[in-house]
Image (tube, rainbow, N blue to C red):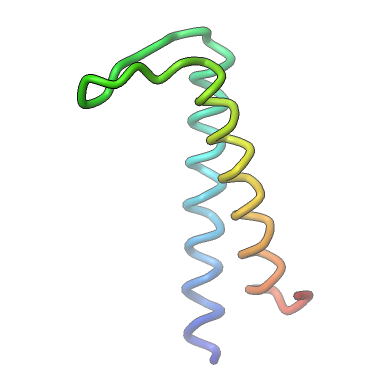
Length: 66
């Protein structure tokens, strides 16, 4: 059980960084393509919000409040 909480702590930080990265790309206003698909600004903000929610859930689990 303790190992799962440690993994969740790491994943929480990784997801927070992922959310920050997408929010920063959204804020810069840069549209990009990946594998031929257009990553619009709307998609980037949705991904940032979803990753932030995942990070909060993992953090609550990892530090024992959830």
